[in-house]
Length: 194
Image 1: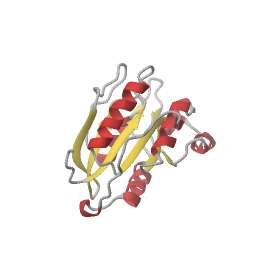
Image 2: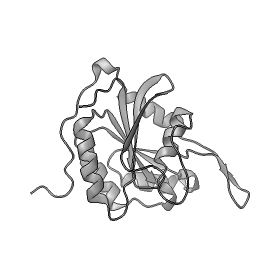
Image 3: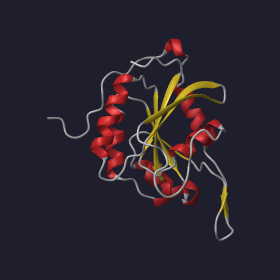
């Protein structure tokens, strides 16, 4: 088993939801490549030791769950989880669609049985408060809306970043010094129990 020295946060979600962008936003550093088009994060789980404000953490950027590859992703995650202590999962959902996918609901529901999970609604700058509230009602864990990147759009309008402090405050509620860490054992079983 890999020996971790820091509080371990794993960032999960479907491909293109903004996992790497969230990591860069939380750390205030361009640690992970981001972009549009094809998936940017290569297959696997990519850990790095860093700081989120005063918290020393290991943060893992996971390859995105892709359509038609859920079973492969599940097997890969279960193997990863058996070999690494996970202290917190940040599960990202692209809020710009104003939809929560059944796949995301199912994965989060399964994970919350053995791991602390915070859902992060990424790209939430285009939603109303009511839409964010409606989405959060469909997610079985604490949910925080975030816009990780301030940017100017083609039509000249701009968005601002928001939500960083709320995510960091939520992380602090789980943060423990390395000597106080606990281990969650076993993998996550996806699908019906038989």
